[in-house]
Image 1 (tube, rainbow, N blue to C red):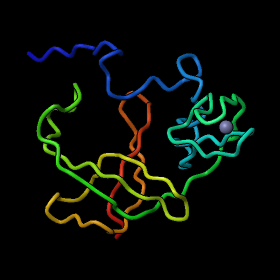
Image 2 (cartoon, helix red, strand yellow; image 1 turned 90 degrees about the vertical axis):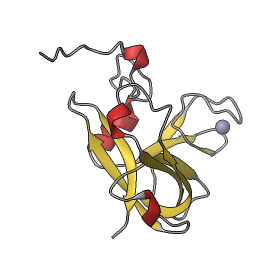
Image 3 (tube, rainbow, N blue to C red; image 1 turned 180 degrees about the vertical axis):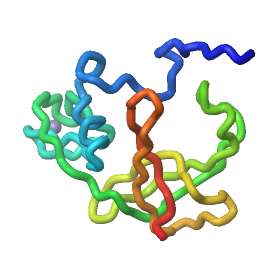
Length: 146
Ligand SMILES: [Zn+2]
C-alpha cells in the first residue's frame, strides 16, 4: 500500500505563495490570472528579477508591479539528470533553459516543457507556460513557441 507523506515545506521546491507566507504574493496571484509580472523600484526605476521587496541597487523598498513579456529567445539550456529537487525525481531527465525576454534586457531561468533536449536550439522562440499545482499553487516554465 502506498502511503502519501506530506513533504516538510522547507524541502518543497515550490514556494509558499499566499500573503501569510510571502511579501511577493502578488507575483503568484498575477500568475494565476495569466500575467507574468515582477517588481520595478519606484526610487531608481530598476526592473528586478526575481520580484523583490527591497531594491538591491538603491535599497528602495517601494515597488510597482509591472507586466513582463511572456515570450523570448532561448539563450542557453541544459539537461538535468541528477541533483533534482526533492519531489521532482520522477521527472528527470528534463531540460532547463535561460530565455532572454523580448523587449527587455532580462533573462529568466526555468524548466522547459514539451520539448526533447535534442530538439532545442539556442535562439529558439520560447513562450511562458503556467503550471497549476495540485495543491492550488502555481508556477511557470518555458515551452517552445509553436
Ligand atoms: Zn532601486
